[in-house]
Image (cartoon, rainbow, N blue to C red):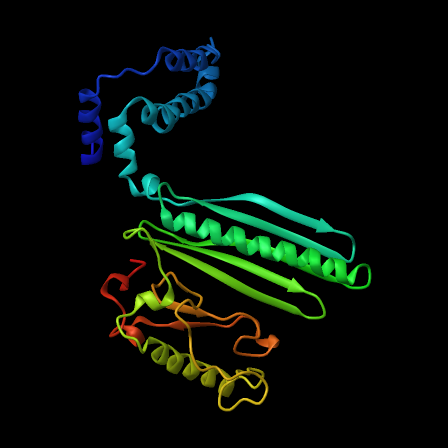
Amino acid sequence: MNEFDKYLKNKAKEEQEDIPQSVKNRIDEVLDSLPEDEQKEEKRIKLFPRVAAVAACFVFITLFVLPNVSSVYAETLEKVPVIGNIVKVVTIRNYFYSDGNHEMDIDVPEIDYENSEAADYINKDVSELTTIIVNQFYQDLEITGNNGYGSIKVDYETVTNTDRWFTLKLNVSETAASSNAYFKFYHIDKNEGKIVELGDLFTADNYSDVLVKEIKKQMKEQMESDENAVYWINDSEIGEEFASVKKDHNFYWNDNGDLVIVFDKYEVAPGSMGTPEFVISEKVIDKILKPEYKNIMS
């Protein structure tokens, strides 16, 4: 028995509340409903489902009954990172429209993170953003009528959800005369219970210069090794030259704990380059990265 189990056992002895009779009755009903086999061989065959049913009852008591019966047990569960510090993300709404020429498919996520102002902020921002997209779709539909073609799709994914860090990525894809794709990343530092933007990661104001220098270096290396690779740098005559990253620029941490800077389609390169990402190793930003964000994924 590990220390956590011992702790729970001692707390259970201290707690004087009993499991409600109604719950006991439900468990007894499940066990009584299991068949009593007369043949030993049949009993062996039936052993697994019977044990599974008993285990299911135990899980039911552990995760759903005891937290409601015992305040001590409930508080203990909240201290377990896997259960108590997890952020849940669910689809609360879907906007769908299709007439053969136009299509809209928008999933609206909501973060469930108890008593979190950061989660409330993200939910509000996502709701406002998706509402704008929906309204714009219908406005464009009124203008084009049956003459044009177009689609809009919005979905999301949970990029990171550890004891320390949470990242939600909102994906937006548009198709009309041409296609476009852009993202919105949301981050929560669970230790601090706050929203974190790119600029919040650094101690120095010149973090943009450091990042731009490294990203341009990688861009040049790609262009030298691949003749089809094109980025808007070095006095580009096609698009706006890449020169800075803003405080709220899109990023995420990869599994190795490296910072990844993400660009929308057409932001720093022609559409053929898609949505470029650049991995910034910790050694590049070690001197300007705040101590609390070092080894973030370890």
